[in-house]
Image (cartoon, helix red, strand yellow):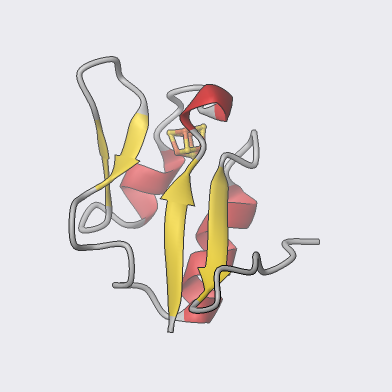
Length: 73
Ligand code: SF4
């Protein structure tokens, strides 16, 4: 199982992650992506990594259960 989180300081509000996984990501009141509460573990690893790679500013982090980040490159 992996978890995703958004580094909001890096988010450019482009919305690709929302288009890719509207069940996991949403915009907050500042139009920055955030993970919908309780949905951070909803994606399988391959999907999470694909979506994170698709973020133009690499604002999405994919982590293993031990908290280590999965490399995106
Ligand atoms: S794809 Fe990246 S930059 Fe775009 S809204 Fe999602 S986190 Fe922000």
